[in-house]
Length: 260
View: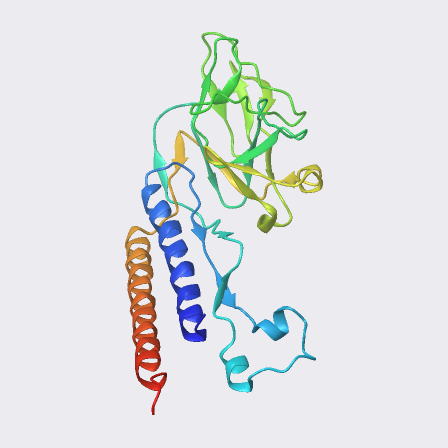
């Protein structure tokens, strides 16, 4: 394959992926507690360096061109989203660092603890405090579901202490992890982490705001511009592939023509 086509094709593929990621961020603009993905890429080394075969002969100019672009794992942007008043006593918004802990009983792994910043909660038929979207039980500081009493107003303070009728009935497990880069998205505004990260979680330094929710932290204008910019890169790399294809055609039909 032509080196130029290969490099342009790598740019095309990475740009298409970035376009998909930015479009997904834009689609979740109204998702409560959503944190956008940030796609990143890096230069791909030439074949000699990548395959560790420096003893083989190679073209110095082609080595300087490298191998194009290659994707890095996505990074999650945990920037604070704006808070919105809902008036619902079972809604809490995270202000600053921190996550609520919930139990995913349908998890395929042994670790069932998930983290979230989606503080829309409700009471299920059994009286437990659960996530309003998925029904997963919200955990207290002892890794147990919080049981609400019938007919009593609920108050939740900034540290997650839940009270009814003036009596404390539990405390939300409001925690943070040492390295947020270890978190991965698990769907439904949930985050999963390795068992050792979950085991080392500590009390959050942020605050909880009752009767509020944290909206998506996506900047709509910036997200739209990112989609447009990635689409432009797709077009440019596609154009470069066409140009290299034309050059190859001319080389084959012209330089490769036999003379007598």
